[in-house]
Image (cartoon, rainbow, N blue to C red):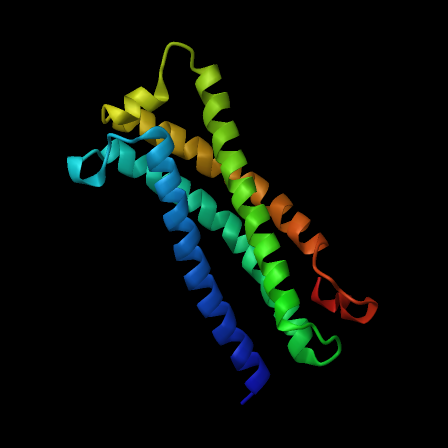
Length: 172
């Protein structure tokens, strides 16, 4: 058995689950407090649930691009070719996740506000609060589509920040 590879896989799985749940929870709370204070899942607002699910999918797609960069730092450290202290790994991981979170917020906000500007006469926030499922599906589809298009670029930005040595570029 390849112990280092197994260890790396366990670290990546653990990191993915813990970080993803934490970031998604924070994102949900921010979304709810900023835009939908009076709307909860208990009110059976399907439109809000669709929209929130779309935001979470968008964030998940972006996090999916970031976790491999964190794993690559750990892989470099475990390979023995480049010793990277645990504190440095934590700093890079935090930086990558922060950048990913900022990009998630920016992408979702920009897409939502641009979509709102293009659909004059419709207040998407109000429509979603009033359980307009059609509006929620259209807005959520736009959010997810733009995220799918932009996520590779975000992954590239994060990869550019990985501290590769000259001999370690085989990971790219």
